[in-house]
Length: 330
View (cartoon, helix red, strand yellow):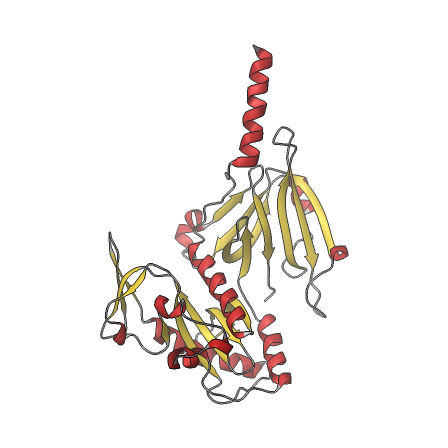
């Protein structure tokens, strides 16, 4: 009887390990996933570089302004705001979007006005970094990427808005036939000099941005990496992992079919301001107890009074994987 019970438990553990996806961390990733999906598709369509999750300093307010992404091509740069809104969407007289779903109605502040406000802020920042763009080179778009986005009175949407129906019709540049697609991101401007184009990408790649947490299953979270939490010995071992020193880290748990005590394996890469990426030899490893937690404060969670609720603690269970955390120093 004991032997049968042991065999049964062993089979259950193995089946659970291989066939059940119980390691998905529920942190509300849909909006972030939409952002990275849009960025990836724009890069494929236009052959440019999409810089995601920027936090651009605003001299007037003294705060950083969050920009979903900036697409840089040889012809122009575009500030892109990604809206993951769903339901029946209409535009009010003041530009507010009214989103009517099956259970509730929401109002979104004018996304186009918000996008337009980000353009001069980004231009000012670029000037401080030594880049003065030609007039009209930097524009803005609002992309609605949710398949459940349905327009009411599509003519009322400004030209800066790319609805979902338009979004799925976008084709690679060589196949752009219709007028609105041809003008969606290209306004007939001359190509920039290669040196300016490269400098713009370099500046944006080193601009302040949100930390990026990539979860198993190609799910993302933008926010701020706060700290590790665990035993004192483990925390001391992880002491070298600081934003000023580390640009990227990969975290995963290792165990033998869930039967042995699992360990938390942390691979991290030191910052190299001279180049991009890292070779296999550049990665360093720290192994700590599996009960070590990773704390991330997601983007938009700013109310101090709700700190215990907005602070998401990623306590990695066996087989849970945080594929990587990309941090930016600012």
